[in-house]
Length: 158
Image (cartoon, rainbow, N blue to C red; front, side, top):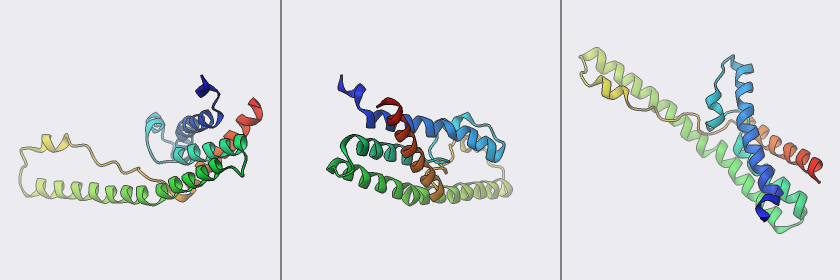
């Protein structure tokens, strides 16, 4: 099966797993907060999206050559993904923060004005996800993670 010998694919998948797992100790060191759920969350340091696409592009570059068309395609793909994670997705997260605050403020106002009998129903609602996108530094280190991991794997395996 050729899929098991596809180095760029496996380097990219390894970069995703590594970036997701390393978020836990980074968060612990920075905030003194142990949160194993970060391994399955979007956002945070480093960006696993950036690690994945840069690992893919680096693996393709190492295997196919830096002058290949598929390397060019993977580089443009990586740039688009990293640009999106610092732009649209980050802004969606910022808006989610504001909407969640508005919901909290509105709830407080209603509770103060009168007793709200359906409060239990309101508490069942899940807040909008705020940690969607990345700060530019998170994308940078995610990209650097992908490149360095792929070069190290290529050196060890080939």
